[in-house]
Image (spheres, rainbow, N blue to C red):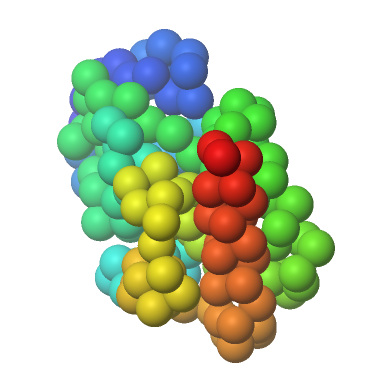
Length: 160
C-alpha cells in the first residue's frame, strides 16, 4: 500500500506520520493516533460526531483526508480538554445533563467552543442554528442549548 508522509501540529505537539492517501482525518486520529474522542457517525459530514479543529476552524473529520492536514494545526476534543480553556463548558454540559450516551458530545463541545469564541453574545436562537449541524439522539437539544447559553452568560458577566 502506498503511503504519504505528513507533518502536523496535533494538540500542540508536532508529529510526523505515514498515511494512506485516501485515509480520512478522523480515521487517522482514531486509529493511528489513538485519539478516540471524535467519533465516526454518518461518514457524510451530516452528523457532526467527527468534528475537529483544523487551523482554528471546526471541520468534519470524515470529509477531510489526513493528507489535507499536512502542515496544519489539528485540535481534537482531547486537546481542547487538556487546555482547560473550556472547562466551564464541559462542566455546564455535565451539570445540565446535556450529554447522555456521549456519542455526539465531543462534536457538540467543539462546535460550542467555536461559537463561544466567535459569537460571545449569541442568542438562544443563534445557538440552535450554530449546533444544527450536530445530531444528538438522546437529549433533545434543549439541555445542550441551556448549557451553552449558561456559559455565554457567565462569561459575559465575568467581563463586567
